[in-house]
Length: 293
Ligand code: GLU
Image (cartoon, rainbow, N blue to C red; front, top):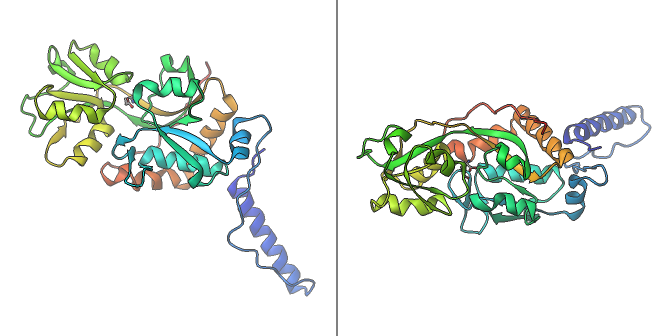
């Protein structure tokens, strides 16, 4: 059983009023109830939450080259919406932010990193889908993206959708849903490890487009003002989930509960607005999907 921050706050308030009442009655001097009542959490023994809480640290895989979602800063720590979601999860596990071990996951190594235990969770613009659910499990979604197309500013080739890319050189990333989705349109696909690696080929004309999720492309366009544009015609649905160990149902449902809590209490919106929201409109949070296998 976990004690939520809310129930602790309520007990702190109850304690404060009890002390105030007894002080009025002259029975005891009130001690300062304090505003910094530590958030103590307790988890059922044997759960991943209990293990992470006892360890006092967590390893989270995220992207390091995707502005707005996961971009490694000068201090070596990533920033972005995915990173903020990771910080909330860590704090609710009773783990100090300084004890989050951030490691870079690229699209192709996310399932293996979870399967091998190299990371505890992955929060990395990671689409929930059935093929991946055979190897790992997903909490969420915590955001719904859609695949889109990035072209040179002014769209010199007049690309209006994936159909216009048939037979053309297009860059995407190995191991992504973007790679698989675009392959259906008969493009000449050039793959690399990260989306930022696709930018130079687009600049120098080796490819005429880069394709992946609209919000990743928006971050890359924003990072390189005046150079690129997103055509803004999403053609897939990409619900972002938090990847965790296969069939770790207790952990999955704990994260799902937490997502619903932060949708309701404003923490999800605050995380969005301080990161992706500096460039993108604030969406409604998606309903979590408590799927059964
Ligand atoms: N959301 C898609 C995926 O998980 C594309 C973005 C990415 O590769 O991270 O494959």
